[in-house]
Image (cartoon, helix red, strand yellow):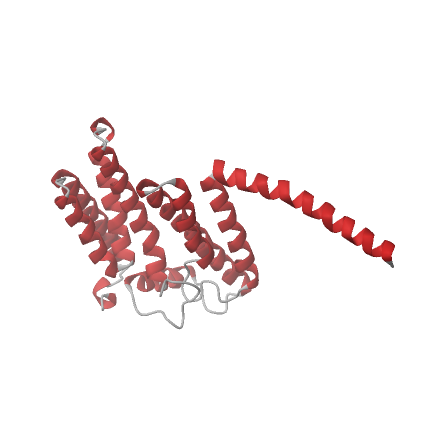
Length: 247
């Protein structure tokens, strides 16, 4: 009996000494490649959830009528997709939600990295990495907000990056077209998630407060271009956007 206990103790000690260098390697990888390590964690979490959690990406209980839902209903009608399309389609839908949420995590990390150090950015981005940011499965209330958020974050990231360069007097790297692209992305975000117009308006005001009227103007032009383009698309699909605008 004593020999068996001694053998188990030796196995435990051996496992303990094997785990220590492994954890050190993981820690070193995380410090050397913070973004890659964060995305690997996010991918692993989403693979598990997509396969084993059917409620992942479900938004029926909390979804209110929005422009995105009107567009989605029209596309389902055109493609002939109904509620009885099977579990395979639902699995594909959850996988698409997970892919979009990976982009959201990426943008959150990049924005935090611009305003802080990589260590703090990694820790802050770890919250949405594990909370999934999904309709009915996290901190986002509906599909429109979920799909509009990464567009807004991308636009905000571009604007913030240009402002950081301008603040550091690296004016040769500041491009007005970047503000135009940011505006287009945020305009698409508004088209998907119309309540986000208040967020975009605050970004424009901040640009004016920071004495960057040209950047604010180019961003506004991009927003208008995106909204007009979406309006033309909805008109071509015979979708009335006014039907879905309600607070």
